[in-house]
Amino acid sequence: MTIEAKARVYGDAIDTDVIIPAKYLTSRDPMFLGSKCMEPIDPEFATRIDRGDVLVGGRNFGCGSSREHAVLALQGAGISCVVAKSFARIFYRNAINQGLVVLICPQAVDVAKEGDPIAVDITTGTISVRGETFSTEPFPPFLREIIDIGGLVPYVKQRMAQRQAAGQ
Image (cartoon, rainbow, N blue to C red; front, side, top):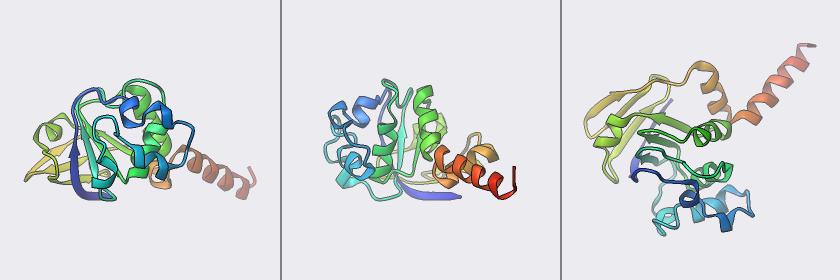
């Protein structure tokens, strides 16, 4: 699967309170959360994003509170993938649980500029920006399955249905 979009570039330590401020945590609606995404540092974020854009972050992206809402906000805003130098561990896991592609590739982050065309192949771990191609570790097949189906809950439901159908 290849994602081709524009890069939306941010710096280091973008925390979950920046991705979605706590005052909006009364909702789990991705579209509502997406409309408020990145509001503290970029009030126009939600109106500038094209569905499918790739967010490019620096070090420790998603630090702060353990907040699934942050992933939902990014998805609701239209972000298809986050490429960063590093991720906060709990954000990384929440992203996979919610079916958001997250890849670590410091070299691509260093090259990407706001609005650049970016291509991310999650099967091979290849990221192309500004005529340069970078490699990162691709998701193993079982994580790709979780991402492809939309997250951990749909994955588990599918597996349970398959087991029931097989009489297990």
